Amino acid sequence: MPASTRHHRALAVFVHCLGILAAVPALPTAAPEAAAAPRPPAVTPQPVAATPQTMAATPRPTGATPEPAATRPPVAMVARLTEPTPPSAPPAMAPPSRAPASAPPQQVTVAVATESSPAPRYRIQVRNVSSSPLDTTVRQELPPGSSTTAISGGGRSTPAGGSATEVTWRLRLPAHSTTTLGTALAATAPGRPLTAPTCAFTSDGSRPYDCATATWQAAAAPAAEVTEAPVWRRYPVLLAGLAVLLLISAAVVWVWRRRRGRRVTAAALSSGGGPEGGRGTIYPRPAAPSPLRRRRTPPVWMLVGAAVVVLAGVVGTAGWTATRQVASIDTQKQPTSGAWMGTGVTGSLGVPLRESAFEFTVYRMTCGAPGTAGKADGGGAAPANGRRCEATVGVHNVTGDHQPWHSELQRAYLPGGRWVSTDESATRMANLGRDVFADPMAAGTRMVLPLVFTVDGRDPPQQLELRSGVFSAGVRVQMP
Figure 1 (cartoon, rainbow, N blue to C red):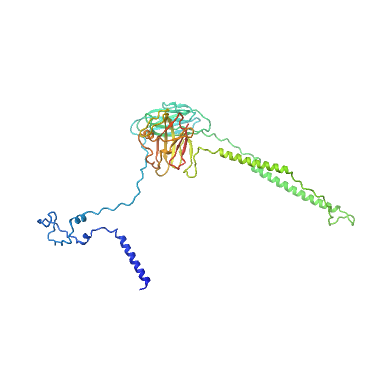
Figure 2 (cartoon, rainbow, N blue to C red; figure 1 turned 30 degrees about the horizontal axis):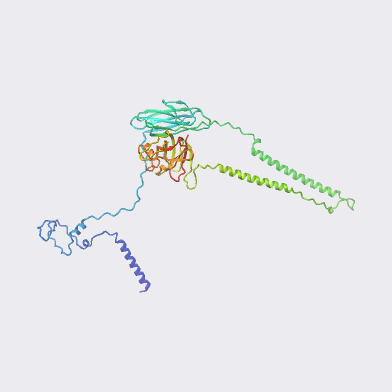
């Protein structure tokens, strides 16, 4: 047998053995004694007389041939054979993620719409979708500097701190009923949009049911009728006429110079005298040498002065452009490109602002008196002159997947650039013990909830920064 054939056959035997060894663990396990021992016939066992050599509890089949002692399995082995085979281990699976949080069922819904009128007017619909009557407090935040001219439904206009004003209604809503309210504001400057967010709270005004917002925009003035200019006053026609005039002028000058050259040549030929009775000759006469004229050049001081002026103009323009660009840089603005997701958006109270995953709307911001921030359950001690500011925020997951968000990323900016994060313990208390940051928000979910910030000093927050993730550009809401 050739050597190559022997090597191939040995290799085939080796691979075959490896395949057998790999298939052995997948075979069902069985005891060697059970495999060697024959199965007993299926005979109904009957009791027999007990003898000292046999156990009374062990039944023996009648008429069966006794097995030799050497091949009889012990009692422990019989028990092992009768036990069921344990199930195999389940396949490896990833640990389940946290269940996304769904919005709690709303008992009261709010809808706000504007009316087409010369002055700002808002129509508010408050609906009780539950099967029992409810007491609610409806608050509408008015834009800074605006005043009401009409309030329906027994509402009252009260100052809300600073230059802001709010309209408050206390209502008793029957089951499955809808109540319509309305407000009218004084006329404002044309072209100024006015946003008035409205929220429905519980009877004590501590927890929001629902919020909505609407922006009134003045009706656009009818465009003045524009008459078409006559043909001779249109810019294309004027440019075309100027071009034709230049072409005609150039043609006239060319024809005139051509005719003048012919006349000069004819006069020179006719005026030349000679030996033949004064007639001209076709051979030109040698021209007398003309004196050389020096080409006039501008003086050196003029060239140097012009160069200095041009250089000064270039340097001045570059410096002015660089100064304008540096001055236009906003040092307080968050980056909106690079590693950040989405584009940073800035807006005012009541305006929906969308980032990469969430749409945030800040409807209201209220702050207590300095020194009223006590110790919350599970939280640390508040500053001596600290106070709690509560923001009513609407959060809408605009993505197709559940999204987590974190309390440390929601910030309130104070004067001087200082900021504080959400007070988790106070926020949990404001939400009746519910941790709104514990579970991710389900896809398409919208929630209206209070966020509490503990600040020190007398100045309220000037800006709120809200974001869904660490690398999200987020949104910034300017406080009135």
